[in-house]
Image (cartoon, rainbow, N blue to C red; front, side, top):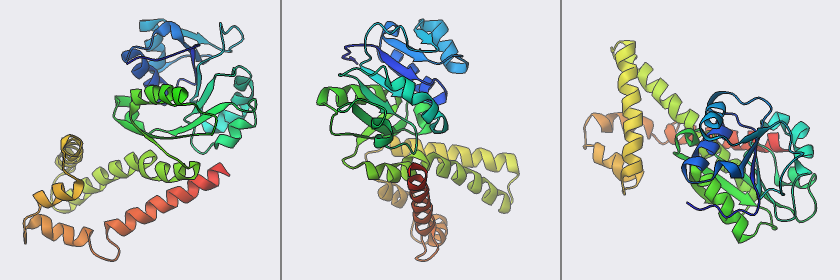
Length: 275
């Protein structure tokens, strides 16, 4: 994969998500000399990546050789107001600022940047840590096609990328895919507890639940069939699966109602956090 750069890639924040992106960039051919990580104390995966590849890690950006091609803002949302105003001073006329901080609007970045600065807001999810995430992204009116391509290349290090036309949809993306891994982990938990209720010991039931959830997810990933078809392939008329699905798919209070309520609650909370 080629990264077309006119200046360095600056990564502000090298926690779990930042380190996952950094690992993906280097694996996909981004030269460590083109990366500057703003993080006063590298630790964990990011420290190991620096030991292996030798990119620059700095506490501040005072000695940048040139304005960045892109500033990737991966600090925690609660630290953004303290960190970003200083970071914004280093954006050049051709810099695109890309944030992966939940709940922070494009406007909240624009107010610290020169008029006309390109800003992209992105929402990855935790499977990005293994390159199997998905990110929803949206840019302001100043993002050029070249900048969009660069941001997409950087985000694809974490998995798939979906571009949106309306920033308001980011809250829905957060509710479905950003928070979604937690729903799947909860499914594994509850399936294991249901197995215990059916008479299995805890260890066996958890082993069955983990392998079933992860295996079904991998089958869905590899298959060309849609989820409904895969479900139907497992379901014999009048069989055990059909009996279980009659509960999960009941018209009132079934899984669809519960998940819809959950997603709408997450979407509402996302809007509250962003306001």
